Image (cartoon, rainbow, N blue to C red):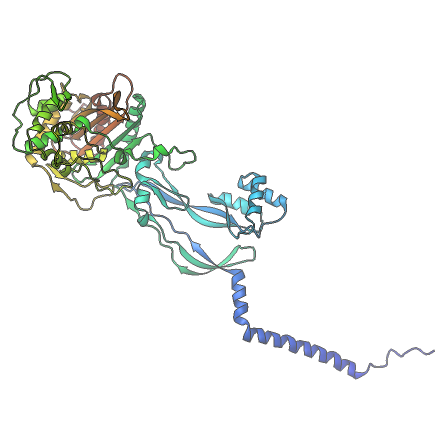
Length: 563
């Protein structure tokens, strides 16, 4: 049988068939591409964008809070936040364990959480970590794990200004203090940008900025951080020394109403709130109410002189050292006999000041207290600031007027007491308190300037030998002040052995610049009077403040020590 000749050519129609097949395939592909380009281009482009184009937020920094000299009290630092899409995370248990260990979490609990949230497309893995930590986690190169930029609030002064500044939550929203009060001003507006990402969610390229980020506005406080540190140290030492429950101090600029110092004990660290005692959050200087006690006597005396019925030279009979009204007894430490207004302050006579006030029209004392700012907020705008309690003037009883004259029967904050003392320091003018730097000073004349100057001069005797506040004296400076020791009011009435020690003072007397009020709650031991517990804090803090502010001495008998 013969074999086919390999040199015999194949029929031509086979070649035509092959070429026709290639041509048909090419036309089919070209037609499909043309159809997709002409009729489905927009759909395909959108599908591509959905998979690779993303609109991301551009974080913006919250406004900074500074003291009056620009020292930072609250700043925002860039951090990284790790998040995941549970649907894209690896299914391998070993990979999830590696991720859990890198995040510092218990592997079993982490895997259980991922399985429980598997239907979600977004969960946080770790909020606000350092960029280095985020890079270590991303280095695992696991699908479904992503990072985004954020800011974290940091408080450089820690406890020192915590009650005033407050703090934010993890989402950078104010929760306490001025962070809350001025949240609308401090809050930043994030921007938006379009980026190109790969299929694993990693950003490849920035395409365009859709909206520029707008940082929050800065906030400049009236606080002087140098003085704040001094007051914090001295108040803390006093509270510890006397084993007190708490303490507060406020220092004002007598000429502007600016708050230069506001400290409280116990305090808290706003940078570490993991085990925070909520009772430590209160800014006691503006939130807590106390009965002022004897520190209000200079103000009562000012009302008496303002009435025109008394002068600084008059004598008031405090005999026999007790005064009975409506079945109640008002007492002095002893029978002081006849007393001038200055001696009433020096010896802190309840009987004498009560007898003066009882000779005035019934409504006068309460009306003047109201004009001095008691019973209403001081104007700081601080969240939760208390207004205090001031009785109505209409139909007030004699016993109520008498007890009001020496600081019982009304309640006030330390801020209100400091504001009222500023009236004496600034020739009878009332200032609204300000926690921000004051651009324009606003005042209201409350009492006659001559009356204010007269009371101020009388108050100096309290800090001189023979007065109750000699421990408030400052070498080189004339100091006006008043001590107070108040029985604490409890459920069963006034406690016999529980006191609040206070001191309010003004310095220097010749040209008042600083007003300060100190409160020590429930000091223990033999020393519990305001002159023993609170007055020394005034001396140490204001003494250093006067020198730091370069305010010259005004005591004519003082001689600068030789260098």
